[in-house]
Image (cartoon, rainbow, N blue to C red; front, side, top):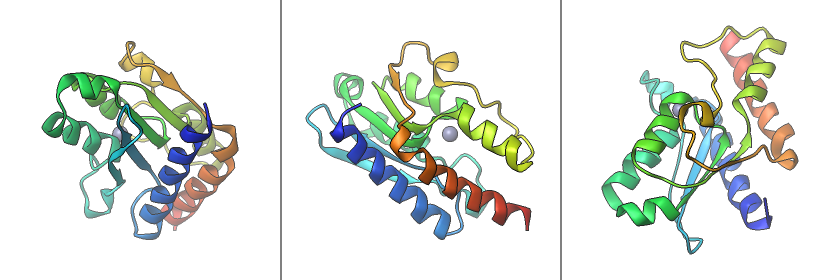
Length: 160
Ligand code: ZN
């Protein structure tokens, strides 16, 4: 993971913070082209009641609508938290390339256990258990504490 990767991941964490402060869950993601251009970005939008409004899922749909297959394959998805199985499947089905995440699903699961958060309806599988052909990199140790703090604020808010 290089400085460019970290810069993109920092933007994901900023989007995650924006989502949390807007009543959504703290997750943010970017789609970056092979030449380094940010093509699309989004953040979690589940507060309206649709629990599938994950940024990585929006990225997959956007890529399928806007990029030819060879550009999807060469694009990189950056995300504050590792893809859930739904998003990993969507990523693989549309033929997107490498994934770089700041924190893993295993880390999130451990934090939830530490804080007494009940497991959700979908297993926290690693991306490569769902999409074995996708190159994956993470976590980014420099950003773990910041993401953990955002997730902890969500857990506190949800328990009230
Ligand atoms: Zn997801």
